[in-house]
Length: 433
Image (cartoon, rainbow, N blue to C red; front, side, top):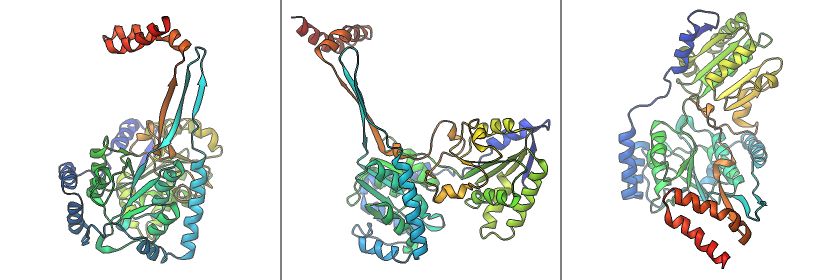
């Protein structure tokens, strides 16, 4: 049964803290296994990837068949119904338009000493996109990861996607076509992450790896970070809905279940100013759990990690939301914009009862790759910025070096870095001759 909390209860703080600290991540001790896999791929390259794919995905490959041919991709994508392809195309257009507005500008200016300063942005040369296979194979995630990379100007985008028993998801292939993925490899797991990071005879290494995966994939991303960049270590999905009593309980129940059906470890929370409405939502969830296809998954998530919290007012709701720092935050209240200004820690905010979180998963435009496990306190969702690097620029003139060089020399001397200071002094002496 879902938890009911009320901020007026004497034990609220203890129960709320326990809710925040509930361990939802499925984190078996896989690091040692992952370390061995990465070392094996670094040492033996293709041979290791082929063997591990046969072991874990029951798929026999060779170096020549690791990569899917353009003909194979096209044949699989052709199986997608026209309506699904049209929906993917619509989503791609909206995602592309949204992320194009995120592109930053370079800057250059001359300061009062005559020095020219600034910065410029450039994309990483190659990015790797991890796409889960099997039941958790989502074409929408292909769009959300690949399109920002292409908007940023990444020249080479390599996608890895496991195909257990050789089964390919046609919609994933169609999404890859639409998004402009350059290479697709039918491999997954820690071995795929290692191949992207270090390269093999067939797979050239990339500069950054993005995309979700299981515990083995997450552990592999942690281990290769530093050799390559990564987006984030994503945990189970989560949603927080703040709703007043002027809502349809069934709508809110469906919004909560939209995340609960992802994973038994997902978390769906409701904060409301109306205890009666909270009970109505709980009843609506129970009714929906009788019919949902993924009711066993959603039911376990709701039972183990769900909660309905009654608060005195929306100020209190916003304060609790900031402590939760949810991945997804729905504000189903009379003035959602005003309330959103108080909610400073959230991966994505959905404003008003006509904006279900599922719109953001597919066609809204903003990215659905978002920080989980309270990391929205210090991080953001995926964007073009994840595929860009900022390089600073500085150019001194004779006058500007004369103006600021002595200070640099003194600071170098204070740090006992003689050559630093001398490199400036040599030029100053030249100017003074």
